[in-house]
Amino acid sequence: MLKLIIFGPPSAGKGTQAQRLSERYGIPQIATGDLLRDAVAKQTPLGAKIKSYLDSGRLGPDDLIVQLISDRVSKPDCAGGYILDGFPRTMGQARELDKMAEVDIVLNIVVDMERLVERAIGRRTCGQCAAVYHVSFNPPKAPGVCDKCGSGLIQRDDDKEDTVRNRLRIYMEQTAPLLEHFRMNDNLVDIDGSKGIDGVFDQMVEAIERVRA
Ligand code: AMP
Image (tube, rainbow, N blue to C red; front, side, top):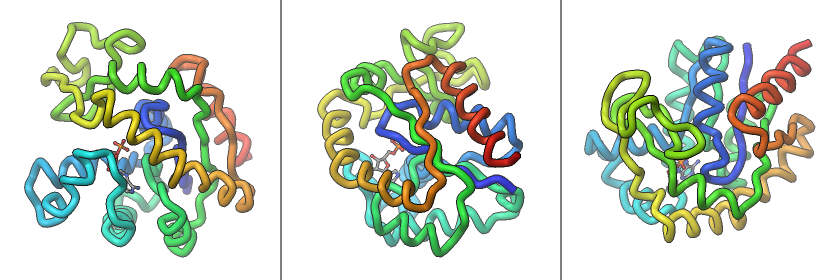
């Protein structure tokens, strides 16, 4: 059983690392942003409620998000653990999570704020399988085409510069204060996010192996 939180500002590389860790440890990546975008694309009732939040980069209401996660972690594929990517993002969500589960480790990706805008603007995601690329730092083999499934890559609407800056501001105001909460739970590990995709992954695996030992 392994329960992880990948924490950090928007475009710190949470999704990229969560995908890799999911493959390595055989546990699902639970990315709130992907679940929400999927709900919008499928025009579900949740999607209708959440669309305006996604478009503007604001955080969705805690009750909706907590319900979404609580349903997801109850599924059979989560029996051996899971990786939370993009949850919790508010104090309210963190308190609800504490009631729901005991998390083994919080991996906090530390990245210089200046670099985040650059990373977000260059990010491309697969419309089909949600794999993540960057036009310069992690390009696909053929431009605009997903290496994993061959579908077309898209730029998320909320990766445009204005929305990115808004998301960063919201992170600083509402999400970064959670670090203090995790520190009190004594399971927070800082990861140097400037070390490249492999370097960041290696630090994470090392930290996970330490808590499992
Ligand atoms: P992400 O893909 O993680 O960058 O999330 C994209 C967007 O989904 C965010 O800008 C929010 O609008 C929404 N979102 C994702 N996770 C959460 C969360 N834990 N709480 C509230 N809103 C969220």
